[in-house]
Image (cartoon, rainbow, N blue to C red; front, side, top):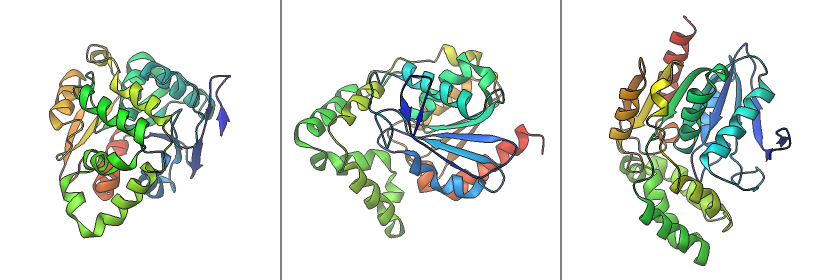
Length: 265
């Protein structure tokens, strides 16, 4: 746990060593552990820092939880763990909302940006997600945990017997969440769009999206790609809204290739 200049106590896990740092920023209702396969792959050559957003995982639940606040948290974390040296930022969904704001507003902090299963637009499913959040807050997570899991994972993952433990483990994690996590959910549901802002991003950017993503459908990533000049877009087969967990080998391969290009390897 680390205090960020009086802002909030953020938990982060640091593994590995190397001349450069990768910051991993998780999606809503996950935590730093969603990056376990990427950290394991890169820690022999990079310093890997995976953190929990405020109000989630092991971080302090101090409001507010809007995306601008989370972006400021991430900027403060980067300045603390890698002072004066830009990092590679990898963000999925909510982490992508943060990453786009960082790249547009504080590009000096980033050497590269990888966006995964995310969107630059306001939330189109506000009513549905507010209903799920209301049920969660009123009756607890169990009545909606299976529905939430069906949003977080693609149909191929849900139907794959070899991946049932992965799905069940995260479902059980969600079922342990306290009602206060709905405050973080509201921050995502009510977020503002950044489509105009991202047009000024010049940081090398890669965009990955699962071709079975129902939360931020592939057309959302296509629009990001169109807005960010020089960006690369890859669709990942048999993955939904959690590509780094569902198809970790493919994600690692694409991230490896991209970082090599950024570094001129």
